[in-house]
Image 1 (tube, rainbow, N blue to C red):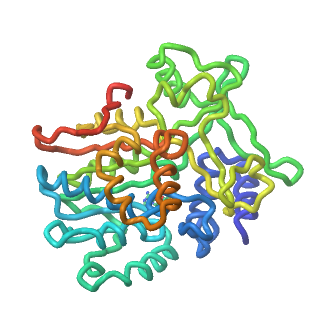
Image 2: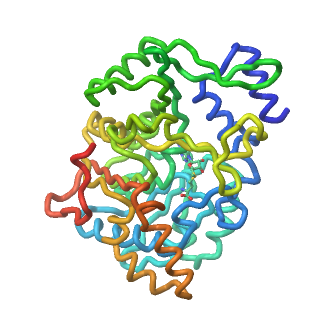
Image 3: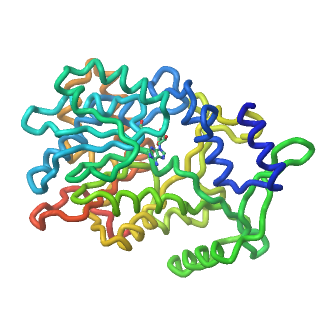
Amino acid sequence: MNLTKEIHAKIKQEGYITFDEFIDMSLYFPNYGYYNNPNTEFGPKNSDFITAPEISEIYACSILKFYKDIRKHKKIENVLEFGAGSGEMAFNFLNNCDAKNLPNKYYIVEKNIHLIEKQNNKLKKLSKNLYEKIVWVKDIKAIDDVFIIANEILDAIPAKFFKKEDDKFFEKSVKEEDEKLVISLLDCKEHLLEEIYSIESRLGSKIPNSYSFEINFLQEKFLSEIFNKISNFILLIIDYGYHEEEFFHPQRKNGTVQFYKNHSKIEDIFSYPHGSFDISVSVDFSRVFRTALNYGIKLYSFTTQSQFLLNTNILEFAQKIEGEFDKNNILKTLLFPSDMGENFKIMVLCDDISGEFQSSFKDFRHKL
Ligand SMILES: C[S@@+](CC[C@H](N)C(=O)[O-])C[C@H]1O[C@@H](n2cnc3c(N)ncnc32)[C@H](O)[C@@H]1O
């Protein structure tokens, strides 16, 4: 049975599936989900989108510089990377790290068994002493004193979708009509309405009619695992997203969800085979911050990708790139505001850090 059949079967059983269930099946269904099948590619050649670690080695060099700075103020022995893509970040991080700063272990949490094989093939090319540092883990419970990298992970965690019409909130779901999948609006359950009203109360204004938006409830589960299981960490969350006021900007009427195939956005998702395109939802960083606060976690920094990279010597590392044309293109993509520079944010959370270590990045924490 392929994924389309699986989705139809589930809808037949239950009458509908909510949009977060639809995303979960589309991205993570065993063997057929976009991120769970043997064909998933992250490299620039065969992928549907490109992430910063894949654009250039210098991105990992900047992250490494930050790791080294943090190590001067905090006992950091290990690195943990969630969803390591093609393995590019891990490869470049370890390959550029001086002996004095090498982590004891570089842990990778990877949901896709096929990707583990691809990552392993790439990382085997490291020298033996570096390769031996890499450990793929399913559970993060015995990992402490760790620098954690979550690059474009939260945007791949399924969110719930909502729409306000005629002064009423609905949850978006997927159902069948004449054997075809269509979007349908369900009455919003009470606990979801409460969450929406609390957003409106913080915004100090009502969400307008004909307005679609997303709320990611599952990201709390992901974050709480880290906060509960790991002690002594620095967590870097890198993703496209906004603070709450910008996330719920009245002009963003269609929400932040994006469907990507062959480096282009697609609109009519039901006309493509399920599991054949990427689905991502921008991160509401104010929500992430509130979760962190609830677990007693501190916000060390919230800034834009360009501010972070410029302060971690990306321009110096750019000397590594051969050819003026390539160098300019890579720097533009990583730094320009209309590209990744301002659309991507970097949030740094930690359970404890020396008061002497002040962030040098332009500070946007007050926006959260
Ligand atoms: C857009 S890709 C980013 C991959 C890579 N970090 C990069 O930047 O190239 C999103 C990845 O997040 C992974 N992911 C989502 N939830 C995860 C979780 N709970 N633990 C580990 N990986 C997760 C997905 O499997 C997918 O590989």
